[in-house]
Length: 419
Image (cartoon, rainbow, N blue to C red; front, side, top):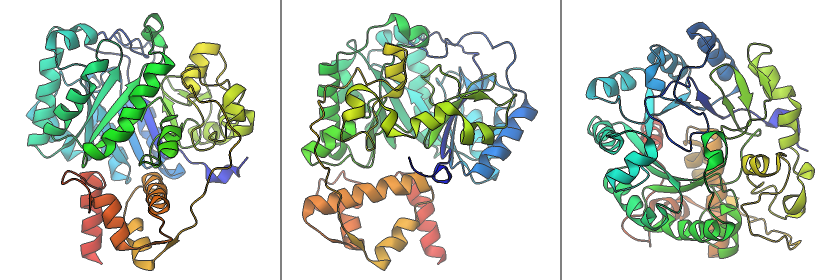
Protein backbone atom coordinates (compact mmCIF):
# COMPACT_ATOMS: atom_id res chain seq x y z
CA UNK A 1 0.00 0.00 0.00
CA UNK A 2 1.27 3.48 -0.85
CA UNK A 3 2.25 5.93 1.85
CA UNK A 4 -0.69 7.57 3.54
CA UNK A 5 0.67 11.05 2.73
CA UNK A 6 -0.08 10.49 -0.96
CA UNK A 7 -3.82 10.58 -0.41
CA UNK A 8 -5.82 13.77 -0.26
CA UNK A 9 -9.55 14.46 -0.74
CA UNK A 10 -9.09 16.23 -4.09
CA UNK A 11 -12.78 15.88 -4.98
CA UNK A 12 -15.65 15.94 -2.49
CA UNK A 13 -19.34 15.45 -3.17
CA UNK A 14 -21.34 17.19 -0.45
CA UNK A 15 -25.01 16.35 0.05
CA UNK A 16 -25.96 19.53 1.91
CA UNK A 17 -29.61 18.59 2.43
CA UNK A 18 -32.14 15.82 1.90
CA UNK A 19 -34.79 18.41 1.13
CA UNK A 20 -35.91 18.18 -2.49
CA UNK A 21 -38.75 19.40 -4.70
CA UNK A 22 -38.71 16.29 -6.93
CA UNK A 23 -39.12 12.57 -6.16
CA UNK A 24 -36.72 10.59 -8.35
CA UNK A 25 -37.31 6.83 -7.98
CA UNK A 26 -33.58 6.04 -8.07
CA UNK A 27 -32.46 8.68 -5.53
CA UNK A 28 -29.67 7.29 -3.34
CA UNK A 29 -30.48 10.02 -0.80
CA UNK A 30 -34.22 9.23 -0.75
CA UNK A 31 -34.62 12.97 -1.03
CA UNK A 32 -37.81 14.78 -0.03
CA UNK A 33 -37.99 16.12 3.50
CA UNK A 34 -35.11 17.84 5.23
CA UNK A 35 -33.08 15.57 7.52
CA UNK A 36 -33.61 16.05 11.24
CA UNK A 37 -30.23 17.53 12.14
CA UNK A 38 -28.46 18.80 9.06
CA UNK A 39 -25.12 20.56 9.42
CA UNK A 40 -25.48 24.22 10.34
CA UNK A 41 -23.98 27.08 8.37
CA UNK A 42 -21.25 27.46 10.97
CA UNK A 43 -20.41 23.76 10.80
CA UNK A 44 -20.33 23.87 6.99
CA UNK A 45 -17.97 26.85 6.93
CA UNK A 46 -15.68 25.13 9.42
CA UNK A 47 -15.61 22.04 7.22
CA UNK A 48 -14.56 24.10 4.22
CA UNK A 49 -11.57 25.37 6.19
CA UNK A 50 -10.59 21.76 6.86
CA UNK A 51 -11.07 20.80 3.20
CA UNK A 52 -8.82 23.64 2.11
CA UNK A 53 -6.11 22.62 4.56
CA UNK A 54 -6.26 19.03 3.30
CA UNK A 55 -5.84 20.07 -0.34
CA UNK A 56 -9.38 19.71 -1.69
CA UNK A 57 -9.47 21.06 -5.25
CA UNK A 58 -13.06 20.56 -6.38
CA UNK A 59 -16.29 20.56 -4.36
CA UNK A 60 -19.63 19.40 -5.68
CA UNK A 61 -22.51 20.99 -3.76
CA UNK A 62 -25.62 18.89 -4.17
CA UNK A 63 -28.60 17.49 -2.28
CA UNK A 64 -31.48 16.77 -2.35
CA UNK A 65 -31.76 20.18 -3.96
CA UNK A 66 -28.95 22.44 -2.73
CA UNK A 67 -30.74 25.63 -3.80
CA UNK A 68 -33.29 24.93 -1.05
CA UNK A 69 -30.61 25.80 1.53
CA UNK A 70 -30.72 29.52 2.27
CA UNK A 71 -27.00 29.56 3.03
CA UNK A 72 -25.96 27.89 -0.24
CA UNK A 73 -24.28 31.01 -1.60
CA UNK A 74 -22.36 31.60 1.63
CA UNK A 75 -21.07 28.02 1.48
CA UNK A 76 -20.11 28.33 -2.18
CA UNK A 77 -18.41 31.69 -1.58
CA UNK A 78 -16.41 30.32 1.32
CA UNK A 79 -15.09 27.43 -0.80
CA UNK A 80 -14.33 29.45 -3.93
CA UNK A 81 -12.56 32.18 -1.92
CA UNK A 82 -10.11 29.49 -0.78
CA UNK A 83 -9.35 28.45 -4.34
CA UNK A 84 -11.63 25.41 -4.38
CA UNK A 85 -13.48 24.90 -7.67
CA UNK A 86 -17.20 24.71 -6.93
CA UNK A 87 -19.71 22.82 -9.05
CA UNK A 88 -23.39 22.74 -8.11
CA UNK A 89 -25.68 19.79 -8.82
CA UNK A 90 -29.30 20.92 -9.19
CA UNK A 91 -32.51 19.64 -10.75
CA UNK A 92 -32.97 23.06 -12.35
CA UNK A 93 -36.42 23.84 -10.96
CA UNK A 94 -35.21 26.92 -9.07
CA UNK A 95 -32.66 28.11 -11.63
CA UNK A 96 -33.39 31.62 -12.93
CA UNK A 97 -31.24 34.43 -14.31
CA UNK A 98 -31.07 35.89 -10.81
CA UNK A 99 -29.99 32.60 -9.28
CA UNK A 100 -27.29 32.08 -11.92
CA UNK A 101 -26.07 35.62 -11.30
CA UNK A 102 -25.68 34.80 -7.60
CA UNK A 103 -23.85 31.57 -8.45
CA UNK A 104 -21.38 33.45 -10.60
CA UNK A 105 -20.90 36.13 -7.92
CA UNK A 106 -20.00 33.51 -5.30
CA UNK A 107 -17.57 31.69 -7.59
CA UNK A 108 -19.51 28.66 -8.84
CA UNK A 109 -17.64 27.34 -11.88
CA UNK A 110 -20.22 24.94 -13.29
CA UNK A 111 -23.69 23.47 -12.86
CA UNK A 112 -24.61 19.80 -13.27
CA UNK A 113 -28.15 19.15 -14.49
CA UNK A 114 -29.84 15.79 -15.12
CA UNK A 115 -31.58 15.00 -18.40
CA UNK A 116 -32.72 11.38 -18.58
CA UNK A 117 -34.80 11.44 -21.77
CA UNK A 118 -35.61 13.70 -24.69
CA UNK A 119 -39.24 12.67 -24.24
CA UNK A 120 -40.56 15.21 -21.69
CA UNK A 121 -43.22 12.85 -20.37
CA UNK A 122 -40.73 10.04 -19.83
CA UNK A 123 -38.25 12.36 -18.11
CA UNK A 124 -40.97 13.89 -15.91
CA UNK A 125 -42.20 10.48 -14.83
CA UNK A 126 -38.69 9.39 -13.93
CA UNK A 127 -37.84 12.62 -12.09
CA UNK A 128 -41.12 12.79 -10.19
CA UNK A 129 -42.27 16.25 -11.30
CA UNK A 130 -44.86 17.35 -13.87
CA UNK A 131 -42.62 19.97 -15.53
CA UNK A 132 -39.19 18.61 -14.62
CA UNK A 133 -38.00 18.36 -18.24
CA UNK A 134 -38.93 21.96 -19.04
CA UNK A 135 -37.19 23.20 -15.89
CA UNK A 136 -34.01 21.22 -16.62
CA UNK A 137 -33.75 22.42 -20.21
CA UNK A 138 -34.53 25.98 -19.17
CA UNK A 139 -31.77 25.79 -16.56
CA UNK A 140 -29.25 24.59 -19.17
CA UNK A 141 -30.15 27.48 -21.44
CA UNK A 142 -30.06 30.12 -18.68
CA UNK A 143 -26.66 28.94 -17.45
CA UNK A 144 -25.12 29.02 -20.91
CA UNK A 145 -26.70 32.38 -21.74
CA UNK A 146 -24.99 33.79 -18.66
CA UNK A 147 -21.64 32.17 -19.43
CA UNK A 148 -21.83 29.49 -16.74
CA UNK A 149 -20.56 26.06 -17.77
CA UNK A 150 -22.94 23.09 -17.62
CA UNK A 151 -22.59 19.33 -17.30
CA UNK A 152 -25.42 17.10 -18.50
CA UNK A 153 -25.92 14.01 -16.37
CA UNK A 154 -27.92 10.96 -17.46
CA UNK A 155 -28.66 7.73 -15.64
CA UNK A 156 -28.74 4.95 -18.23
CA UNK A 157 -31.47 2.32 -17.90
CA UNK A 158 -33.40 0.14 -20.29
CA UNK A 159 -36.00 2.92 -20.65
CA UNK A 160 -33.47 5.31 -22.24
CA UNK A 161 -30.72 2.94 -23.42
CA UNK A 162 -31.45 3.57 -27.10
CA UNK A 163 -31.64 7.33 -26.54
CA UNK A 164 -28.07 7.85 -25.36
CA UNK A 165 -26.66 8.96 -28.76
CA UNK A 166 -29.47 11.50 -29.12
CA UNK A 167 -28.91 12.71 -25.55
CA UNK A 168 -25.21 13.17 -26.31
CA UNK A 169 -26.04 15.23 -29.39
CA UNK A 170 -28.54 17.26 -27.38
CA UNK A 171 -25.97 17.98 -24.66
CA UNK A 172 -23.41 19.15 -27.20
CA UNK A 173 -26.01 21.31 -28.93
CA UNK A 174 -26.75 22.98 -25.58
CA UNK A 175 -23.08 23.74 -25.07
CA UNK A 176 -22.33 21.27 -22.26
CA UNK A 177 -18.65 20.91 -21.38
CA UNK A 178 -19.25 17.31 -20.23
CA UNK A 179 -21.77 14.50 -20.61
CA UNK A 180 -21.65 12.16 -17.60
CA UNK A 181 -23.36 8.80 -18.02
CA UNK A 182 -24.24 7.22 -14.68
CA UNK A 183 -24.78 3.50 -14.30
CA UNK A 184 -27.48 2.81 -11.71
CA UNK A 185 -26.44 1.50 -8.31
CA UNK A 186 -29.19 -0.23 -6.34
CA UNK A 187 -29.08 1.89 -3.22
CA UNK A 188 -31.54 4.27 -1.54
CA UNK A 189 -34.82 4.30 -3.46
CA UNK A 190 -32.92 2.68 -6.32
CA UNK A 191 -32.92 -0.63 -4.43
CA UNK A 192 -36.27 -1.36 -6.06
CA UNK A 193 -35.01 -0.70 -9.60
CA UNK A 194 -33.41 -3.11 -12.04
CA UNK A 195 -29.80 -2.49 -12.94
CA UNK A 196 -28.53 -3.07 -16.48
CA UNK A 197 -27.09 -6.52 -17.08
CA UNK A 198 -23.27 -6.71 -17.20
CA UNK A 199 -23.56 -7.46 -20.93
CA UNK A 200 -25.63 -4.35 -21.61
CA UNK A 201 -23.29 -2.30 -19.43
CA UNK A 202 -20.21 -3.43 -21.35
CA UNK A 203 -21.86 -2.72 -24.68
CA UNK A 204 -22.68 0.83 -23.57
CA UNK A 205 -19.17 1.40 -22.21
CA UNK A 206 -17.70 0.25 -25.52
CA UNK A 207 -19.88 2.81 -27.26
CA UNK A 208 -18.70 5.52 -24.86
CA UNK A 209 -15.08 4.80 -25.75
CA UNK A 210 -15.93 5.52 -29.39
CA UNK A 211 -18.13 8.52 -28.61
CA UNK A 212 -15.29 10.32 -26.79
CA UNK A 213 -13.74 11.42 -30.08
CA UNK A 214 -17.02 11.86 -31.94
CA UNK A 215 -18.44 14.37 -29.47
CA UNK A 216 -15.35 16.47 -28.66
CA UNK A 217 -14.84 19.15 -27.43
CA UNK A 218 -17.55 17.97 -25.02
CA UNK A 219 -16.14 15.40 -22.62
CA UNK A 220 -17.88 12.01 -22.50
CA UNK A 221 -17.49 10.19 -19.20
CA UNK A 222 -18.81 7.09 -17.45
CA UNK A 223 -19.70 7.15 -13.76
CA UNK A 224 -19.96 4.13 -11.45
CA UNK A 225 -18.50 1.86 -14.14
CA UNK A 226 -14.70 2.03 -13.68
CA UNK A 227 -14.14 -0.94 -16.02
CA UNK A 228 -14.35 1.75 -18.71
CA UNK A 229 -10.57 1.93 -18.29
CA UNK A 230 -10.06 -1.76 -19.00
CA UNK A 231 -12.19 -1.53 -22.14
CA UNK A 232 -10.33 1.58 -23.34
CA UNK A 233 -6.96 -0.05 -22.66
CA UNK A 234 -7.78 -3.26 -24.52
CA UNK A 235 -9.15 -1.37 -27.50
CA UNK A 236 -6.16 0.98 -27.64
CA UNK A 237 -8.40 4.03 -27.60
CA UNK A 238 -8.66 7.19 -25.51
CA UNK A 239 -10.07 6.94 -22.03
CA UNK A 240 -7.21 5.98 -19.74
CA UNK A 241 -7.35 9.46 -18.21
CA UNK A 242 -10.96 8.95 -17.10
CA UNK A 243 -12.85 6.32 -15.17
CA UNK A 244 -11.39 4.31 -12.31
CA UNK A 245 -12.87 4.22 -8.81
CA UNK A 246 -11.60 7.16 -6.73
CA UNK A 247 -13.59 6.26 -3.60
CA UNK A 248 -11.46 6.74 -0.51
CA UNK A 249 -8.30 7.61 -2.44
CA UNK A 250 -9.08 11.01 -3.96
CA UNK A 251 -12.81 11.24 -3.37
CA UNK A 252 -15.44 11.01 -0.66
CA UNK A 253 -18.95 12.18 0.20
CA UNK A 254 -20.25 14.19 3.15
CA UNK A 255 -23.91 13.55 4.00
CA UNK A 256 -26.36 16.18 5.38
CA UNK A 257 -25.92 15.15 9.02
CA UNK A 258 -22.13 14.85 8.81
CA UNK A 259 -21.48 11.21 7.90
CA UNK A 260 -18.48 10.68 5.63
CA UNK A 261 -18.74 7.83 3.14
CA UNK A 262 -16.26 6.80 0.42
CA UNK A 263 -18.71 7.81 -2.30
CA UNK A 264 -22.35 8.99 -2.49
CA UNK A 265 -23.68 5.53 -3.33
CA UNK A 266 -22.05 3.73 -0.40
CA UNK A 267 -23.84 3.48 2.93
CA UNK A 268 -20.78 2.31 4.86
CA UNK A 269 -19.72 5.19 7.13
CA UNK A 270 -16.07 6.13 7.58
CA UNK A 271 -16.86 8.60 10.38
CA UNK A 272 -18.93 11.64 11.31
CA UNK A 273 -17.55 15.19 11.29
CA UNK A 274 -19.41 15.99 14.51
CA UNK A 275 -17.50 13.24 16.31
CA UNK A 276 -14.07 13.59 14.65
CA UNK A 277 -12.36 16.17 12.52
CA UNK A 278 -12.72 15.63 8.79
CA UNK A 279 -8.94 15.38 8.54
CA UNK A 280 -8.81 12.61 11.13
CA UNK A 281 -11.51 10.68 9.33
CA UNK A 282 -9.74 11.06 5.98
CA UNK A 283 -6.37 9.99 7.37
CA UNK A 284 -7.33 7.32 9.88
CA UNK A 285 -10.65 5.68 8.95
CA UNK A 286 -10.24 1.89 8.60
CA UNK A 287 -12.85 1.94 5.81
CA UNK A 288 -10.84 4.43 3.75
CA UNK A 289 -7.60 2.59 4.54
CA UNK A 290 -9.16 -0.61 3.16
CA UNK A 291 -10.00 1.11 -0.12
CA UNK A 292 -6.42 2.35 -0.53
CA UNK A 293 -5.02 -1.19 -0.61
CA UNK A 294 -5.82 -3.08 -3.85
CA UNK A 295 -4.47 -6.24 -2.21
CA UNK A 296 -7.59 -6.35 -0.03
CA UNK A 297 -9.95 -6.63 -3.01
CA UNK A 298 -11.66 -9.99 -3.32
CA UNK A 299 -12.82 -12.26 -6.13
CA UNK A 300 -12.04 -11.27 -9.70
CA UNK A 301 -11.14 -7.71 -8.66
CA UNK A 302 -8.50 -9.05 -6.29
CA UNK A 303 -6.92 -11.16 -9.05
CA UNK A 304 -7.32 -8.58 -11.81
CA UNK A 305 -4.33 -6.95 -13.47
CA UNK A 306 -6.42 -3.77 -13.73
CA UNK A 307 -7.18 -3.50 -10.01
CA UNK A 308 -4.99 -0.42 -9.54
CA UNK A 309 -6.06 1.23 -12.79
CA UNK A 310 -9.78 0.43 -12.40
CA UNK A 311 -10.46 -0.90 -8.90
CA UNK A 312 -13.98 -2.06 -9.67
CA UNK A 313 -17.07 -0.25 -8.44
CA UNK A 314 -16.96 -0.44 -4.66
CA UNK A 315 -20.49 0.87 -4.18
CA UNK A 316 -21.92 -1.75 -6.56
CA UNK A 317 -20.02 -4.46 -4.70
CA UNK A 318 -21.45 -3.23 -1.40
CA UNK A 319 -25.00 -3.01 -2.76
CA UNK A 320 -24.83 -6.52 -4.24
CA UNK A 321 -22.76 -8.45 -1.69
CA UNK A 322 -22.90 -6.24 1.41
CA UNK A 323 -19.09 -6.11 1.18
CA UNK A 324 -17.34 -3.13 -0.41
CA UNK A 325 -14.18 -5.19 -1.01
CA UNK A 326 -15.90 -7.87 -3.06
CA UNK A 327 -15.63 -8.13 -6.85
CA UNK A 328 -17.67 -5.78 -9.02
CA UNK A 329 -20.78 -7.74 -10.11
CA UNK A 330 -21.34 -5.35 -13.03
CA UNK A 331 -18.05 -6.22 -14.77
CA UNK A 332 -17.63 -9.14 -17.18
CA UNK A 333 -13.85 -9.10 -17.43
CA UNK A 334 -12.01 -12.27 -16.48
CA UNK A 335 -8.50 -11.61 -15.14
CA UNK A 336 -5.71 -12.94 -17.37
CA UNK A 337 -2.63 -12.26 -15.27
CA UNK A 338 -1.12 -9.98 -17.90
CA UNK A 339 1.56 -7.43 -17.16
CA UNK A 340 0.17 -4.10 -18.30
CA UNK A 341 2.47 -2.00 -20.43
CA UNK A 342 3.58 1.22 -18.83
CA UNK A 343 4.56 3.85 -21.40
CA UNK A 344 8.12 5.09 -20.96
CA UNK A 345 7.94 8.58 -22.38
CA UNK A 346 9.92 11.75 -21.83
CA UNK A 347 8.32 15.16 -21.53
CA UNK A 348 9.93 18.21 -23.07
CA UNK A 349 10.30 21.20 -20.76
CA UNK A 350 7.75 23.16 -22.81
CA UNK A 351 5.20 20.32 -22.64
CA UNK A 352 5.67 19.95 -18.88
CA UNK A 353 5.14 23.68 -18.44
CA UNK A 354 1.88 23.52 -20.39
CA UNK A 355 0.70 20.53 -18.38
CA UNK A 356 1.38 22.42 -15.14
CA UNK A 357 -0.99 25.19 -16.25
CA UNK A 358 -3.96 22.89 -15.71
CA UNK A 359 -5.05 24.26 -12.32
CA UNK A 360 -6.45 21.13 -10.65
CA UNK A 361 -3.84 18.51 -9.75
CA UNK A 362 -6.11 15.47 -9.91
CA UNK A 363 -7.35 16.51 -13.37
CA UNK A 364 -3.78 17.32 -14.41
CA UNK A 365 -2.73 13.79 -13.46
CA UNK A 366 -5.57 12.29 -15.48
CA UNK A 367 -4.63 14.38 -18.52
CA UNK A 368 -0.99 13.33 -18.09
CA UNK A 369 -1.94 9.66 -18.15
CA UNK A 370 -4.11 10.18 -21.20
CA UNK A 371 -1.31 11.97 -23.08
CA UNK A 372 1.13 9.21 -22.26
CA UNK A 373 -1.36 6.60 -23.46
CA UNK A 374 -1.76 8.61 -26.69
CA UNK A 375 2.02 8.72 -27.13
CA UNK A 376 2.28 4.96 -26.61
CA UNK A 377 -0.38 4.26 -29.22
CA UNK A 378 1.45 6.52 -31.69
CA UNK A 379 4.82 4.92 -30.93
CA UNK A 380 6.18 8.21 -29.56
CA UNK A 381 8.72 8.50 -26.77
CA UNK A 382 8.82 12.29 -26.46
CA UNK A 383 5.82 14.45 -25.59
CA UNK A 384 6.15 17.93 -27.03
CA UNK A 385 3.67 20.82 -27.28
CA UNK A 386 2.82 19.59 -30.80
CA UNK A 387 1.97 16.13 -29.45
CA UNK A 388 -0.19 17.75 -26.78
CA UNK A 389 -1.91 19.84 -29.41
CA UNK A 390 -2.66 16.76 -31.50
CA UNK A 391 -4.00 14.81 -28.54
CA UNK A 392 -5.93 17.57 -26.76
CA UNK A 393 -6.83 20.09 -29.46
CA UNK A 394 -7.63 17.53 -32.11
CA UNK A 395 -5.14 18.02 -34.96
CA UNK A 396 -5.71 15.26 -37.45
CA UNK A 397 -9.11 14.42 -35.98
CA UNK A 398 -12.60 15.68 -36.64
CA UNK A 399 -13.18 19.43 -36.46
CA UNK A 400 -15.21 18.80 -33.31
CA UNK A 401 -12.20 17.59 -31.37
CA UNK A 402 -11.15 19.62 -28.38
CA UNK A 403 -9.08 19.77 -25.27
CA UNK A 404 -9.73 20.53 -21.65
CA UNK A 405 -13.07 21.85 -20.37
CA UNK A 406 -13.60 25.54 -21.24
CA UNK A 407 -13.39 26.85 -17.67
CA UNK A 408 -10.06 25.09 -17.14
CA UNK A 409 -8.76 26.10 -20.57
CA UNK A 410 -9.62 29.74 -19.96
CA UNK A 411 -7.82 29.70 -16.61
CA UNK A 412 -4.75 28.07 -18.20
CA UNK A 413 -4.73 30.63 -21.01
CA UNK A 414 -4.92 33.52 -18.51
CA UNK A 415 -1.99 32.01 -16.63
CA UNK A 416 0.01 31.69 -19.85
CA UNK A 417 -0.62 35.31 -20.84
CA UNK A 418 0.50 36.54 -17.43
CA UNK A 419 3.86 34.79 -17.66
